[in-house]
View (cartoon, rainbow, N blue to C red):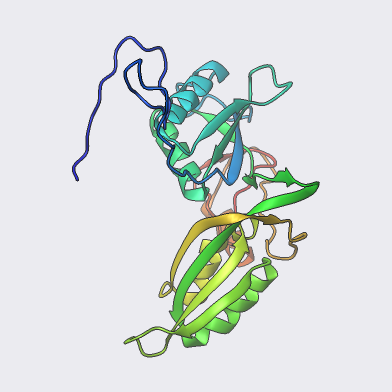
Length: 260
């Protein structure tokens, strides 16, 4: 079936899953299932020493308006003003890292300049217990990579439910995990490193389940700038053995800024 476009006039606001019908119709159509958001980040105006150097849309009002427009077009995005922030901070809930990353990149290209908090999972209370989103993760990897992958997923509270050879693919294994969303934050980079780019990973929201406990020891430290100014090739060359850098030579930095 092809795409259909419907134009409606004379109605203030129409939401997803609303039923449009004549006045004699009293029963609405059942709404389709939409996966709930599982991750959230807080957007706020840039208050770093480098504020105003790269963008033109800087105020909280413009950032909030842009986020609300995005929420109108995306059924899985929710935007709310953070309490006691004076309207300066906005919590954005989305389905995953990719959706939040695309939103941030699109806003950056549109000239917006803002700060974002680290992502966190959206928890909920059910029968007096804290529950967290759990995802189904399917991987295809070389057989020699299964051990490190299982070790990493176990450390992130993942549970292996299926493991079998991939048909017509010699030396490859299919792994199926059930893992909390918070344990998968930043895991794609680790997965690519272990499999040397040869692995395939797909993930999808499964359900909410009881909180599986704290996750520790899976995140490494960061490299932080000690002064204001611009980076030099010599300084970065000395830092390279200590981690992965994302600061470039000649880039403006400030004291306390994460560079790798």
